[in-house]
Every structure is written in structure tokens, then in C-alpha cells.
Image (cartoon, rainbow, N blue to C red):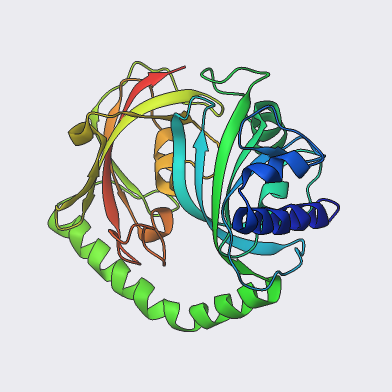
Length: 301
């Protein structure tokens, strides 16, 4: 990859400079000066700032590697509009300034902050409109903390090992979910994906479409009725761009596709639509756990 060696050299310079003198000298030696204090600009136009460097042996980026990483997306005013853990297959960047470069230049255990073009991120990568709270010619901050990097072979071996014992866990979850539906007298048919919905309040008919910036309230429960999350209790509605990858779980995205502005509905979701075989990144929700979400669409822009 054409930027890989450039970044490795900068990382080496960062370590050496920090130990001997001060990290300030790193930016004096860099070929490309950044307009943002504390950041380095690479040839593709991306600005980056190393936050943590792992001391393990460097490995060359291979297109198709799988990255498990904690991600944070922010406006330039540091307002967070996404935070979560994802496993992402990273290929060769298709254009200069693509977010794939950000992943590809990091090693396992590394963490860095990036500033990238909003147009490249939303229009050319995610294929959605730029949110109204970000200027068309603006920038987006992305913080990436790489937890693990797997080759395609390593990923496939892990997947096969997982599939050898997953069946029993799935069957156990299916039995629990079926019993819950029967005990609660939920008299609706599930969707093709296995999700049940019970409407509480009708909306105004304005549907949720891809690229819309929507504001929602949600509350989440386990099947035993115990809360695990609530934007209402925090008094903090969740605002995001619908259809943007890595924003919400699959079940919430499917649920919103059936809703309109002002509507409130309860959804019962199997784990394959929620937090899957790994559970939530926080550890609050165990693997193979069906969940309940009450969702209200407050506003659609």
C-alpha cells in the first residue's frame, strides 16, 4: 500500500522524538504540515494524530484483513454522533482520502485520531447524504482503537470453529424466545427475520428514508423485564443518519424502516438482529440474548 511505509516512518519518528525530546519535534520534521494543531497531514490529505502505539512487531497490511476496533465519529466541535465496536473487513482504498487508509496504517493495539473529508466519508464511502449538522465541504473526526487484526485465513478458521458449537446456543435462545412470546400473548406474526412488533402510538405517516437525519428515543429490556439502556432516563435522544453503516444494530434499522415520524412501537428481537453471538461491547448484554426495544421516532429531517 502506497501510504503504509510513510506512516510507519512517522510512527517510528513519533516514538523516537517523544522519548528523546518531545513530541513537538515530530511535527517540525514532517514533510506535510497540518492545518490542525497536533495532527500530521499525509499525502492523501488525511490528517492524523497518534494516541497510542503498540510495541508489537509491525505487520504489513493485506487487503481483506479483518479489523476489530472501537470507533468514535465526531464533528469538528467534538460532538459525538456514533460510538461503538465493530469488526470490519478492510480492502485497498478506492480513492485518496478514503477511511480504509485510516485502518490500513494502524497496527493491532494502535489508536489514532483522524480528520477526513465529510464528502469522502458520507458520499463516496457510505453512499448517503451528508448530515445537516456537518457542512458539505466540512471535515469529520474519526477515532480508531484497533483491538485485533485477523487475516482472511485466520477469520475463516475462527468462523468454522465457532459454527461447530453455535447450533446449541441458537436452539436454546429460540426456545426462550418462543416461551416469552407465548407467555406474553403476543398475537402478531414475526417478520422474515424473526422480529415481533406491537404498535403503541401511530405516527403522522412521514416515513423514515435512507439518508434522513432522525432523532429517536429508545428503551431496551431483557426478556425478564430488566432495563439495560434508556435514552429517556438519560434525557438524551439519539440522533443519527439512517442507513449509515455502523450506527445502530440491524434490528433497530429494520424496525425504523417500518416506522413514521411520531410513532412509538415495541419490538422483540432475536440476538441475530441485536448483539449476536458476541454480546454487547460493554459486556452488559450476553451472547445469544433476545432483547426488547421500545422505539419512538421524534423527528425526521
